[in-house]
Length: 304
Image (cartoon, rainbow, N blue to C red):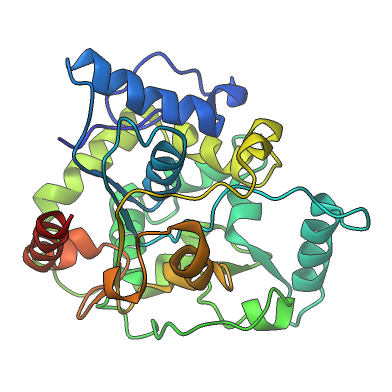
């Protein structure tokens, strides 16, 4: 099954103004509660895509007695945070990056920086996009897919602002642009097979009903040091794990070094042979190449 997570779709019990409820351990508890509510004690495989990937990763890290294997998609899981050294201030590093991006010509900002402030501005910018919500979503999906010719992912050597500026503008945005304005020039011609107008209408209807704010609240906590996660510092995923990404998905490289850290340290049962890069697919790999993704997952499950 593929449940809507907290803040998305038909989920209930969350409040867009109560940002603290979107802490990672709450998101993990949601999945565990769902498993128990369905009457199960264990799950053969948990699969998470995009922001679902860190949730699946922490589920596997914290409760390997429940989740017997895990598949992480598009977003590498680099593990829990480490205790900062005496001369290291995580908030200071984030501030330095923000200042470095702002000093570029033209000035830039990280998309998480755009999404995360606890105001409702980012939500309003998308929900009330000048081009209309349907055209905004269509262009957004297109720009992060293999159909958009601007996607040419490759590893980045560092967190330096000038290096991160190589990422497409849906990641490292112009400072004076909203996300709706960023994707507007890239509206595609035609309707792709992997996301028909009928399928897109599901997203349009749900975001119109619930707004984007529930999902945006995830970003508010993704950029903060969640103290409770330090309890798992240096802990690793020890159950069988696999990673799947589209070859045109910048998601696997947007955090320099995360893919290698996941493969070589954070997941003890992964290695290079369980990192799968799917051709002719971008960020929406399970939609763009569903048959290949199912084949890979089936192959992985038969091997564990």
